[in-house]
Image (tube, rainbow, N blue to C red; front, side, top):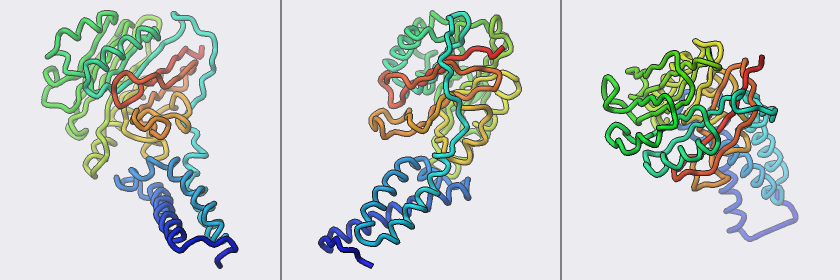
Length: 323
């Protein structure tokens, strides 16, 4: 039944058309939780917070025309928002006091293959006294030796790039650390879309802690989703082979999807009110860069840092041992 407030037929048509589109998106986000291997549904679910907010706004607008439709739409929208509202796979930082020798600071960032962004990231890492820096889509540093000197502050630099992998791979990956290493490896599997992951087992004060850095493929096709999931599963398994681990990188995965729930450990910081990509979207971006960690580590601090010239924001996390 049409309410007392009446607007022009054109406005009514526009509102109803908007409601149809938005509620269609709400339905698809619900379906994404039931059909987890559909790349189209996951792409819609990646923007779940945006869809929920717009859905509630549309419900308020529709209340002027038909309260029953508005209430039904709002209820369905809130049901679709459950993965966002009830998200628990994250840890809030303790903000405890932590000296440089007591804490381990890690940063992950996708520099989009830009040399200037790489240099800016390393300057930012130096300002934050970062012990470990994971660089996604790093430039092929073996081809550009002038950029190797930028990593001189780090005792160990591990490159997974085209020239030092056993066969052609996807985007280059670099891990730099000032911590001593007991073991390091670069892994490139056939089922991961030519994407690699780097393993670094720390030694010294952080002996027994494993760092795994990776960059998964964007799931814009069924094959893209399959290879992304294969890489995240393999990197996650490699991380959990150590009781103490940090798994980080550009996962091309938002926390509101079933695949995210398969990741080991907890996420550093609540992703519901943060964004890491794209920088151009500002507060309307989505979180696809993550730092996951094991239960034996205490999260002291985490922040999304200022942009360095890439389309991704760097993400920082600071840890100390619980014991």
